[in-house]
Image 1 (cartoon, rainbow, N blue to C red):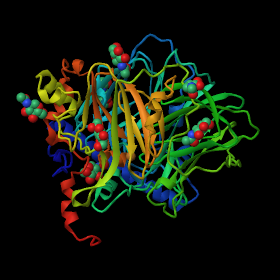
Image 2 (tube, helix red, strand yellow; image 1 turned 30 degrees about the horizontal axis):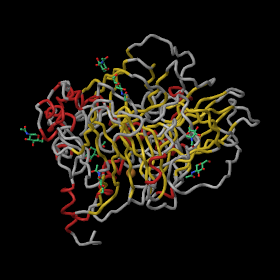
Image 3 (cartoon, protein in one colour; image 1 turned 30 degrees about the vertical axis):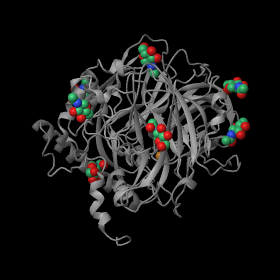
Length: 620
Ligand SMILES: *[C@@H]1O[C@H](CO)[C@@H](O)[C@H](O)[C@H]1NC(C)=O
Ligand SMILES: *[C@@H]1O[C@H](CO)[C@@H](O)[C@H](O)[C@H]1NC(C)=O
Ligand SMILES: *[C@@H]1O[C@H](CO)[C@@H](O)[C@H](O)[C@H]1NC(C)=O
Ligand SMILES: *[C@@H]1O[C@H](CO)[C@@H](O)[C@H](O)[C@H]1NC(C)=O
Ligand SMILES: *[C@@H]1O[C@H](CO)[C@@H](O)[C@H](O)[C@H]1NC(C)=O
Ligand SMILES: *[C@@H]1O[C@H](CO)[C@@H](O)[C@H](O)[C@H]1NC(C)=O
Ligand SMILES: *[C@@H]1O[C@H](CO)[C@@H](O)[C@H](O)[C@H]1NC(C)=O
Ligand SMILES: [Cu+2]
């Protein structure tokens, strides 16, 4: 456990390859210099006054290295894309590093891919093979997870620290390689190592397919997310400290595609995300909540939106004025640009009611601008004005119907779990599924399972919760054969949880407040219910999902709130163990596990808080 928490005793001391150390130091020095230059820039901008952004300086002939800001056109999908192209390999080569940048006007450290924020677009056709070389040039370890990819046959490319992978240590590279099969639509990727994804390690992942039947003149990505001015590594110890119950770090604001203006900064180098959508055309907007904690309500002034996709599942067009999107969920909507004015506000409002407290200076709403023309004028439009719901729950999808009908088969097994937060020893509040509060295992549970199954070790053989693992930390539920699994969860916590299952899509058979009425179980409507990969359980609510356990591997099921995951809200399914038993996990995947001393950063072991907990309550 302790390996991820050790700080380097001296810079680069443990990096084994001297060339890499040198390179890392040079890079670090370079980044540092760049950071200083940016700082000098910001100061001069403030002193000169009236020059709102680097971009202005750049535009006036001032030479500046490539901005940290991703060019908005990177998130506009090209109209020339060949969806019928023969399956091919799409290669990417990424370097992860830390930069100092001020997306909303406040300078902070971001962890980014190729120097830019947010991450690059991955775009492919169904059937393509994706190869992504990742060099970790950052201070701490990292691991990338491809949210919603079934990774059928490549479980060890799932990138889930402690479950399928050991993270990539600083100074090391890793090649992710997998083929995209039987799925298309809007996905994303993000770091799956402690909370580091929320420091900038995320981006969109779009899969095209001739089987998709969504028509629009243009197509683009709109990522909404809450945003903190501090590194997550600085916030995490405060959150996990003793005497801290249900006190998640409250975001400082929110961004759209990495853009926004800090509400307390004047003047600010921040910018609002702007979308040029031609008049009289139809536009597909692929919304992704890439945030840490906050659910959003999203609307576009005066425009009715037509919902056409949910988490990579095409749905019959469903019209709405506003939708709510929880962490890790995706919704594609079609907007018809057929109104009178030239520009409109896009409003994404965090449901701050679900925060432990609402700071006075919090601006829960981040704005974007929809423009029909090139006019620079600010929109003068008003929102729909319907009353806001305060509970954190999913968009009511009871009338949202998948376009490719798939009825849910009869279940073979019903697994019941309680999700909860409990205060345990040393007054530490932690997240639980039943009696298990997850901590990332030093050797991934997959690697142990492959080994144990191959040796026919009995502690890996019974169906159900495997005795092979320490139940306090790892709940691994083994499902034999190809079973249809029902998972019913009761939430005994006063917070909501967007639960995500790796490797699968599931049917959402029901969700609500209070308890599931078991008398309705035999008469559930199993005719083409909504399928998705992330579902919200309300505070003191329940959810019932169903999936066909036919994808071999070790699959995490967890709350996607970054803080709750670190507090332990994760359990795992081992499915198709008959196939897993014959696997050999590739050496480059296992290699990082052999050198725990190379790992840096990450979660904090409970023991680190024991001293703190011994002090009297309220004694600081
Ligand atoms: C990726 O980029 C690095 C640095 O530019 C380069 O050294 C490396 O050869 C590239 N790898 C591939 C597979 O192209
Ligand atoms: C969801 O919408 C349906 C149909 O409009 C309605 O009958 C149902 O009560 C709604 N559910 C909730 C929880 O609001
Ligand atoms: C979780 O705990 C509940 C209540 O104690 C129990 O009924 C259920 O079977 C447990 N789930 C599993 C998977 O063991
Ligand atoms: C079987 O696996 C368990 C859990 O990993 C381990 O403690 C035990 O030593 C193993 N038994 C054998 C015979 O290898
Ligand atoms: C079951 O759900 C389907 C798909 O949403 C719907 O068409 C059908 O009317 C529902 N049946 C009942 C009995 O509610
Ligand atoms: C995984 O692949 C197997 C074999 O092709 C197939 O039967 C199964 O449906 C797939 N499962 C998923 C979740 O993609
Ligand atoms: C790296 O990890 C250490 C230890 O958890 C932490 O103090 C530091 O802030 C982390 N750095 C970044 C950039 O997250
Ligand atoms: Cu949660």
